[in-house]
Length: 124
Image 1 (cartoon, rainbow, N blue to C red):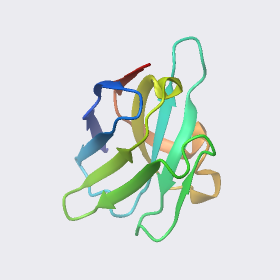
Image 2: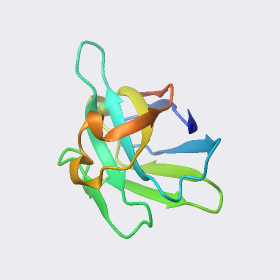
Image 3: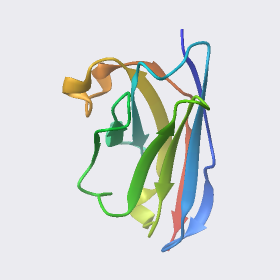
Image 4: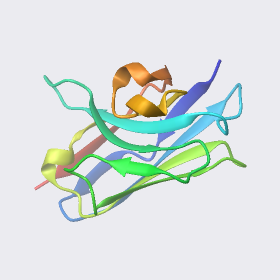
């Protein structure tokens, strides 16, 4: 079992930045691909970014590419999401996830373990 706990969310003005962290426990995340998803009220959970187990491959949703950066520190068992140039449309609960299926990294079903989420609110 992998337990995931997100932190770093909050309220920020449009154009600002936040850095989310996802601390893992129970098992090392070094053998898991990791992802960030988000869910706004009344909407489905959507893919934000993913990173392969070794960090050599990353990908982003088109809506965040160039503004968000996913990274991981396997020694610290922690995943990060640096979010810059935030927009009101980025407002959502952000979840980190761990899984073994890189082939479907942008799909919820590819991930076995999920955190409880951290709220990000961007004001205009």
